[in-house]
Amino acid sequence: MKAAPGDRITVASTHVGEPVRDGEILEARGSDGGPPFLVKWSDDGHESLVFPGPDAHIHHAQAAPTEG
Image 1 (spheres, rainbow, N blue to C red):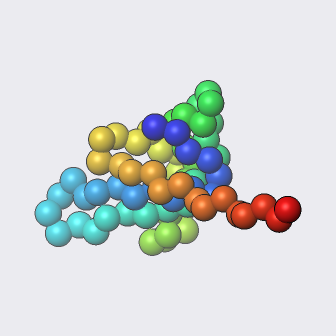
Image 2: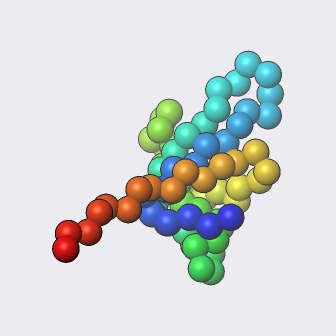
């Protein structure tokens, strides 16, 4: 799993009735964009270091089009 700053991560709930968590990846601290990721969570603004498991999904940010 690889990510870059600006990508988003969603983590499925492990308990029934709990919401899915979503956050913005601020840093990829592993080699070549790998985990752990520093994430700012959208639900409470808290920043934490995340080692994603199989319940996590990365949504890559769209690259800005280049002019030419």
